Structure formats: C-alpha cells, structure tokens
Length: 214
Length: 214
DNA sequence: GCCTGTGAAGCTATTCACAGCT
DNA sequence: AGCTGTGAATAGCTTCACAGGC
Image 1 (cartoon, rainbow over the protein chains, first blue to last red):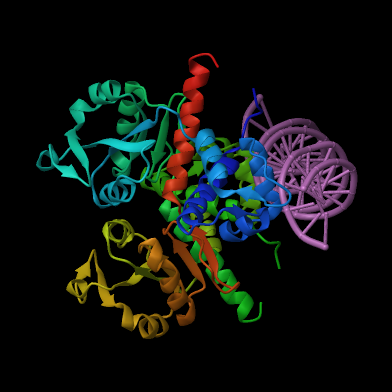
Image 2 (image 1 turned 120 degrees about the vertical axis):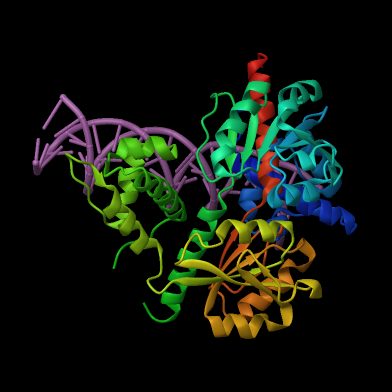
C-alpha cells in the first residue's frame, strides 16, 4: 500500500506521541509543526515529513489537532488488537523496565517475565508474574507474545534469543552488550549502554578541548 | 588537525574495541576487516573506513594486529588521564548501571552516585558511594567529573540536568524519557527505552504481516 | 501573513571498486 | 590471490523553498 517507513521516522513518531499525550493532559487543542518540533528537539520540516508517513493532514490555519494526531499516530504505530511482550532476566535492569512499562500502554504490555532464579518463580513484580525459563516456549505461544526483551548477562543472551525466536517472537529488544544471531525475519534493536556512555565521554572530552582552545 | 568524526563512527569504535577485548582473551593475534565486520554485524568496507578515523593502518597480508588496534582505538577514544562519571538516581536502573560499569573501565569510572533518599546516603553500591544531592556540585567539581548519567524519573530530570551542567559536566547520558534543555557546549545522548520498545513492536508487527502474506 | 504538504536540492553515511602491496 | 586504503558512486535522510489554502 504505502512505501516503507524508516526506523528513524518510527522512533520520532513514538516521541511525538509522548509529547502529544502531555499536551492533551494540559488541555491543548491544536499545535503547529514548528511548536511540536521545539518540544521534541527537531525541525518543522522534519515533523511535516513524518506526518506524511502516518497520512495525517493538518490545517494551514490551525495546525494539527492534538487529539486527532495522537489517534492517527496510534493507529499507525499500534496493532489494533495489541501486542504482548515477554521480558527475560529479572535483575535490576529487568525490574526497572517492568516498573516503567507497568500499565503504561494497554496496546503494548509486558505479559510475562522469566528468570532462572527459583526464588522469583511465581512472584509478581510490578504487576507481572515471573516464570521459570522452562515455561517460556509454551507461555509465549499461548499468550501470543510477539516481542521479547533480553535483560540477562551477555553470556546467556544468545541462548535466550534462540529460545524466544524458536517460540515465535518477531522482535527483540536486546540490552546485552553483544550481537545476537537470529533468523532474518526477526527484528532486533540493541540498547548498548556501554557504547552510549563511551560516546558521551568522547564528545564531552572534545567539548572540553574546544572550550580550552583547541 | 583531523576532520571531525561522526557519532556513528565513535559508537562503532566502542563496539570494535569490545569484540577486540574478547579476541585478545582468546589469544587471537591478527584479524581481517571482513572478520571483524562479521563479529560486529557490519561490513568490511565500513570497518576499514572507521579505521581511517583512528589512523590505524593494517597489513594487506596479516590484516590488523589485535593488540595494536585495541591500543589505537583506546588512544583515540579515551582521555589519557581518564574521565570520571557521576550517576544521579539510584533506583533499579541506576543500580543496574552501577553494577554493570563497576571496575570495567579504569579510564571511565563512575566516581559518585547521588540520590534524594536519606536511607541511601553513605551506602556503597557496587563499589560506588551514594551521596545526597546537596553535595553534587562540590563533589563534581572536586573530583573533576565531566560526565553525568541521569536515571531519575522524568519530572526530576531537568532539575538534575541543570545542577550537573552548572557543576561543569560536559556530557550527559539521559535515561529519562524527555528532551533536556542544556547549554550548547554540553553533549547529550538519550537512551529512550519506550521509543526503542515501540520501534521493535512496530517492526515485529510488520514482519508478522509480511510472513502472513501482506 | 503564516501555515501545510511536497518536489527538488543538499548533505551525510555507506558501499563500490580498484590501485597498490605483499 | 587476497588483503588494505581510498576516490568515486550510491543510497538514505534532512532541509529548502515554494505552491496552495485560509
């Protein structure tokens, strides 16, 4: 139907939606592309381009209707029947994610958590029950889970990814600092905290040198 | 001296270095660009381009010397005298980061943690002492901290960023789901987990549709 | 006048392809 | 033969700039 949309645009749409939720809460009815651009740290042209992807059209006089735009982005990003997520690795990071996503998005909920520690089996953490790894495959299939979050140490990440893919998930959010090998149908997004921190450190140093004169 | 290097290249250099550490541990002496490319999930041409940035030259017969290349990347990325980092917000996410970075990089160490919870003051978490927010400015200045990590809830993130910038940090790694306003000298890198998860969910759905036939 | 939507231009990043080396 | 380093080509993304609308 429509041409493929880049990952960067998808990311920005998620961002737009978040600030739109905020605007809705404040009772704002309309917003212009340049205003939205300031709120997300982008440009007006970029905002308008991204809107082409979702197929939403604003008015030259009133800009975008906040409610309509929010809904349009939702229809574009979300699956109508919702998507379910499994989280594997209930350590500090896993708990942080469970806490953060708990009850936030009805259309994208963490349905089950998994760990190898028997002390955690059956416990409900931030509204999400923790299961033993052995139950992963059956639970993923039964619950129709399509997305997996990997928050285990690096040495277990590949095995976990294999299990999730085998069980039928089609997307992985990987926090382990390593490249995962997965079937090519599976979409993998890495969050590499070490890489990000080293990047910040590098540019901080660069700025320091500039400030000091070369 | 040399032309500016893109953030993407810096990120990949950090990645190369990590896999090179692994190769060193395995006793590998030499590696070709196409082998390194496979290990990081990139292309050989990309690897060679990135090497131009660090100014390291390999041999057409033996490829790259693993030890020399690791050192070269280190000289390029790291500050010779090291850089110190402060982490603000010792919740689950903050603790996960403290655990992960503890003792891993002598040249880039989390020197101090800060929180508002008095129960945490003075406690040492994964080798890092937790201080009250009031001490932030003085400690950052005394310790020569140049990088800040923000792991507080969104509603406190801007205030924390302000304090850190005021104290003189030049780089921020922000986990709060919002855009921070900072002086233009300060480099900010955002890790937006919600955005990443929604991206994964979107592409997982897309793959599902493709698999099922449009 | 000031907005939106969009073709066209511009820019950045990646990949190609080949000279040069061993 | 098979590699590296790199100019040239390509692809992908962003910004410009302007027609069209109120």
